[in-house]
Image: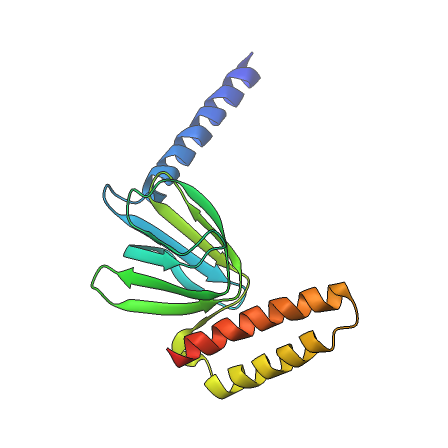
Length: 163
């Protein structure tokens, strides 16, 4: 009997600890916490921000605190993060997902991401030319589809590097 009592008591402690951790991680009323990461870097880690603008396959959209919960697939383009002090960070993403939770926390998980100011316009133009050449010389449908994706990403990199 005492084994069961100890088991229940320990389970109660674990539930209590998890509840406190969840409350600590949730943003305050009227705030939005952003976690933005890619395989190469973590850009924001639960940082409170004012607004996030994202490119998605269902269209570009802005996210503010209390945004309706959303799950979307990122398309190649620029994610713009406006911090509370008005500073903007523009980050190019190749693809990924965005999750907006009902507690106003947002997760952007990108396959690859780089600050726009680090993009090299001439290298992007060169990559676009190469991707277009591969698309035009594709031998089968799979190669053509892969080259089309490379063209789309390269076009968006050129656009971001030029802006």
